[in-house]
Image (tube, rainbow, N blue to C red; front, side, top):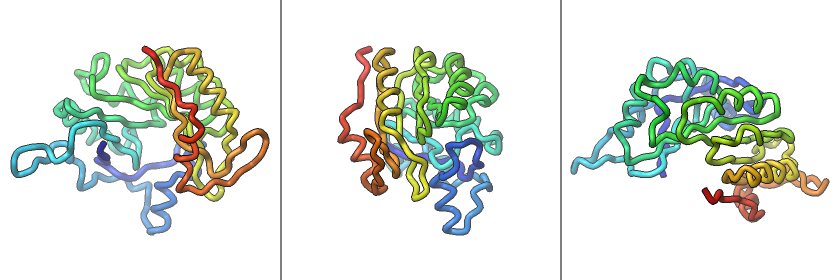
Amino acid sequence: MAMWNPWRGCKKCSEGCLHCYIHKGDARRGIDTSNVHKTKNFYKPRERLKNGNYKMKSGIVYTCFSTDFLIEEADAWRDECWRMMKERQDCTFLFLTKRIERFMECIPEDWNNGYENVVVCCTVENQKNADDRLRIFSKLPIRYKCITAQPLLEKIDIEKYLDDAELVVVGGESDYSARSLDYSWVLDIREQCVRKNVSFTFRQCGTHFIKDGKQYRIETKVLCSQAKKAGIDFVSDS
């Protein structure tokens, strides 16, 4: 498993961005997050060792997790990234986006129905954005689709958008001022996934977590482990 951030910097574009950890961290260090720029790791997938082997190992590559792969400011650089992805068939590149409406204008000419080694995750946080984004996402030519509902801010119905999805990931918000995550919302999405036979993962609890009507405050360091302890992940049999 590897991380690849060919560029850095982002701009808040929806309700889920309110407590973005990238913006928070940059603010503490006096960095202007709105400055989108290429990083020194831009060519990371192509870098080789002295023996000729790739430095970046085969496997899943989490791509642009400190920005958005479809952000407008990176339009001039994205084609080169697609070429590197196509070159590294030994890797599976996974990226998240809140800008799925830009997808068709951002793909390479040979995309067709999608690259075999690219997973596209559309992120949603409330019903409005789920409807707006997933209506588009469900019709796009992508081989492997994932839906990420994190931070989940309210109960949402996404069942009608699950026909082509491989996985749904759900999680809460991590911040001192985080908006609460109700466990019943998580279970409801899980049931939608079970009915559609789509894999489901409860990635993390929220800092402020509601279960059975009782509010809890959970430390950041255990948000993921607490979610795992719930034991509610579901694996599709297809």
